[in-house]
Image 1 (cartoon, rainbow, N blue to C red):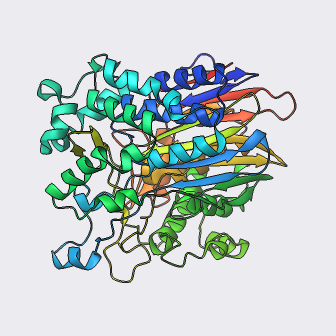
Image 2 (cartoon, helix red, strand yellow):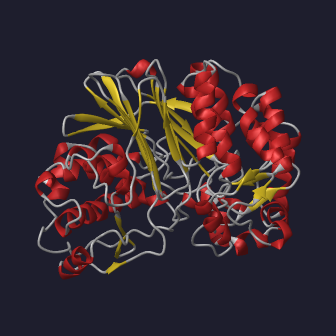
Image 3 (spheres, rainbow, N blue to C red):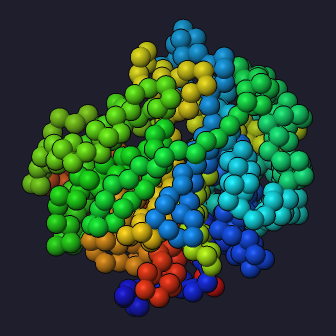
Length: 529
């Protein structure tokens, strides 16, 4: 149990349902749907749609989705890949010829066809009880009638003033009176509300065909994109076979590549060979081992992760015991491992993760994202759709597995997770924060399984991330630990902002009690009933 003298909060407990998201309005909307007879899928899509309005820098209908779903709380886990594809005229060679070594984050070439709306419709049709008209109703109301801007959201919004100013259409929506709205101010997005109403009435085709698609394609082509209406009309999402590993007797499931869930599993495989439970969870030994596992796993990511429809991704080999042993053998517990070049990773922190468990123990782990804050910064004016910049995840290096190609999906950072014990779903969880996500998941899960923390303590626990040659430690990591890490050879700093955010719900297999947590690094909330 946490020290009640210190700031913090307890997990939310319930016996019927639970929902946890990064915004109270989204969590409440999910619970309302559950009370009306909807299931966890209905509630998850409802929450995601609300977040697409009230947390606009992180997510939107112009973004992508990944989902893991355990029906009736069983051990079977279903995975949906709702990531979009590059347009049919995309050409890495043309961008190289234009002098580009990488795809700029605010370029139209960073915009793949968004998958979110198609994913929402598919999940509801296959596994939900309600239709788009009901689940989108709260989001539509907030978009048209307005919503109060949250404190963490206002801070993130204020940091993107220059990006939003660069696109007059984005500035018109997100810089009212020329400035980002402050915490507690009411913001409205009426055109987005109208677009969501069209989707509610006519289905996903209202986004991928007709006036909305014309508006998006027209804007993209105006700023130099090669997208066509046919690219949008052809958009599709697909179910995929989840991948897994076992850690401390628990099966941990992830979506397969093109997502980076495999890196979280690889980190767990490496860490499984160390007796973490004997360590101080805030001590230098724990953070050193985590940092070294990060460096090794992310080097593999930089070299191998791609769309498996277009490149060979050796999933089985990467997750083999032998590979984990070989990587583990490279770790020196007394000093930072020399000779590992840091992967070149663009930093970002914006995504939403949510989880819902309903009365039938359907469990959903769901993540929706624009990638960078406000995505590409390109807004389609007629529809109010902010477009993500996932295409910046492509490589322009000739022959690289993740090289930009027509119809290809980029390497993706967003990764929902599901932990299963025996034949029952035990804990849907996820940690936001872009490239940090595999580290965040490994940190969270080891907090629970090695250090005995409850879900809220595990989310609250201070974090560190070895990124671009620097081990950045949140201020909650003790100074003595940071000093010791420097003596081990790490370059240590304290970042301006904390790492990510997260949600989790654990299901007690004996009494069925749901314990939900929501990360204090966001404006979020968990509710149990």
